[in-house]
Length: 363
Ligand code: FES
Ligand SMILES: [Fe+2]
Image (tube, rainbow, N blue to C red):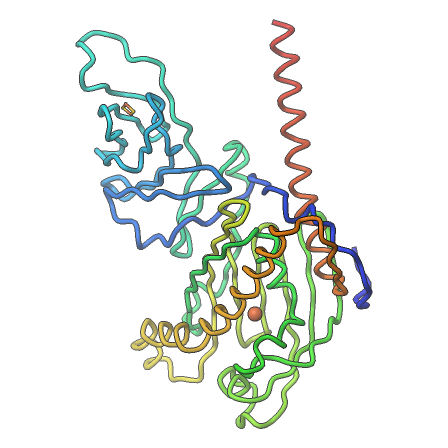
């Protein structure tokens, strides 16, 4: 559906700050190269504690981070073969979360029926992804497509981020190109114009026109001299629950979002840049260059964003009934989508529990 890009005043529905996620998608939980074989990582996906571990053959598994015996956190245990051993009494769980050994159970005695939930897990783009809900849907739900990842022309800058804020606030920051004002001292973009806006039940796509002048123009290769004003189009595609934003042929950023809880969000982002260096040189210095670009350039932008995002969250918590006004229709569309996805999931869950209740009654 095409929406008018006109800036008009609308009241924010505060409900968007209270909704949960639709868990029927893949969520990023960690950088894959940080988890070695035989190690366990505790992660949190929307208030669900999950122990992700890599078995000795390098395969990933994800179990509910609570022992079915007494609830102790399984991530504090250890990996044995492709099983996880609880630290308390040594009960052992296989990759499906089924209890397969109790060290003190007399020989010949049957194991109790004890099961930790297991979750689909995979790694791609050096990110570990978990599917925190209905595992039947995992197989047919694709990960975001990142064609730049395999392409040697692009310089990849991985960007971790941690916000003490609801995911809707973080997502609005990315859709809201009008906040170039905040980054003025870093010579970010200016004169933003919303060109067009499109929404369906899964995505919001917006195109903005922005101008650059200063070191960014030079760095991104828009012009030879930083003192010239250059105008470019930025395409932003929020495909629930992740983002892709790009300036055609110049840079792309993929923001893989992890909603941790009501006021905490993490992000595993992949920034791709075209840098004007010979290929042989680029190949040699890629990791160092990528670290430098992150630390000395983009981290400054991110720190400014985090300050705003967390301030917005604190004010909201102090007075959740307060009225806020927005004029960017892209933000309103984004909020509609976030609320819509949550409601759709809640509706499906209600239907499922009703039908299983009816099923029980018939028995
Ligand atoms: S609590 Fe895990 S084995 Fe007892
Ligand atoms: Fe920003």
